[in-house]
Length: 142
Picture 1 (spheres, rainbow, N blue to C red):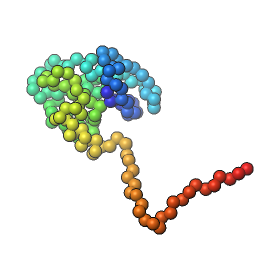
Picture 2: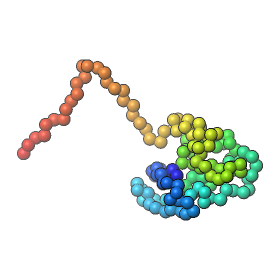
Picture 3: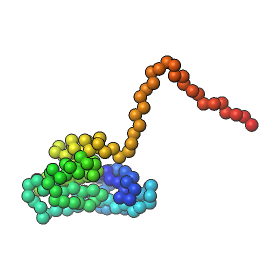
């Protein structure tokens, strides 16, 4: 299960098998905020909205919804939700990682391209023979 600290956004990944039927609590390594994570399967599927197309999502063990499919796709495309989310609707047996649900996977991937969490720097390779490699200066002795 992928999740992030609510306070600072530090990303974490825990094997789902370690969460089955329980809630883990620990302090964020970056900001020391207490994080509570439950298995998505331990969150009971909501019963109030059983109409076709009513979707629910779960992040950090908390479930939200119902939403229609287009609303969730918009959340994924905007980057508001990412691959850490689990989804459920009345036609499913249980919670699934949203990235594994065919209707949402493309919008999750597109949203991560549009809204990268961490900036990366693309530096093109230099092919110019006039550029010479600079070595470190020699260390000075005492």
